[in-house]
Length: 246
Length: 250
Image (cartoon, rainbow over all chains, first blue to last red):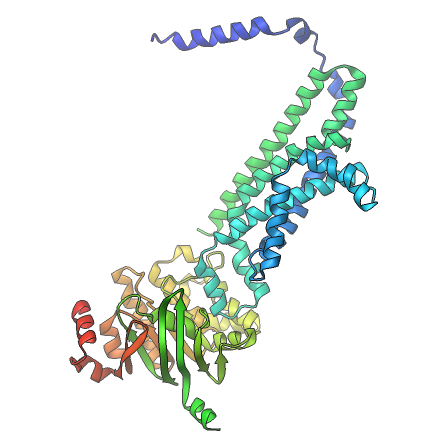
């Protein structure tokens, strides 16, 4: 192996890739369409972020309640929680969304708008996943913390909110953010219901402008930037939390 | 009214208390009375039920048989009774179990504020007094992770004392400590014993037991085989099992 082998291999690979690229199209790309439709795209991004926030907040609240319910000694309640979690975790989001939007109205007679169906679907699925994370977080709190809380006669509500959940939430932050990023990306699936989030909007623009490469490249970049900001911000948050107590 | 007379005499009364873990009998028909002001040290081989006995007194374990009367409250009882007992009986754990996400001040003031409805200002004053007493007032704004094991255990004692309990339970309070830190914790406990606090201590520190305890219990296989005054206990060489145990640890 000479010291030139690496650059040579890279050059070869790039050459092969370049050979198969459609240069005619690449050179004719016109990204001004992205700027032209910036307001619509931005609105789509706002809807995407709102859906993500909805999934994260409602999911976390429901998930926490379900996780606490799963710790009770009352077996039927535990089974109910397990059934809910397993059903929503083990069916595809796409199937859930279509079921909620098209089958549920037939079963219940209640019609939901696309946005409502989307919100219900993503929130319930988030709740199921969050339940598992919160449950694992609660179980990661050492037994001694529970016993100290018991032996000091702390009321149940205080025991949960002040003793068990704070350290549990600390360990939950990384998986919770990963999941939130997953749901942020998952909102694109809601475009199947035409929920006016970023993916739906981009599809529409693409259909009238015939510029799919520019538009979908642009939103891929947008998804990437938002996703990476979220995960880096969490690392920072974890770091701050850790240093506060050490 | 015979029983109530009886209850008045002893602060803690156990009647035929049994506790099973599966088929393992951790406490075997234990009947014992402990009076206000007694300093009781419990010794015995590991797995003999010493910790279980303490935990049962704090309602951290339920009992399968018999009854326990602590300060006129009967166990097993409902949640209210359990909390009543826990307010009157403080517990110090082998692993300290401080609340890691709270400062030392919060650790000590938290329970009195929420379980005893003590005003924040009063709880703060009490915490400062107690932390002075156990010698870690300088660390009051720090978090448990900043402190050594011995310091953490002293905070744990202060935390339990902040509830103004009538009795304190110590579950091997020095077993998780490095040798040089054992002394500082034992000093605090010795001082507490002199103050007249009712104490039940599971320990392997025979030197401490010999000078601080008023009564010694030797436990084996879920039973109290020996129950004597401290002077008697350290002279007694008749009991075969006790003799074997003592020769192993002394």
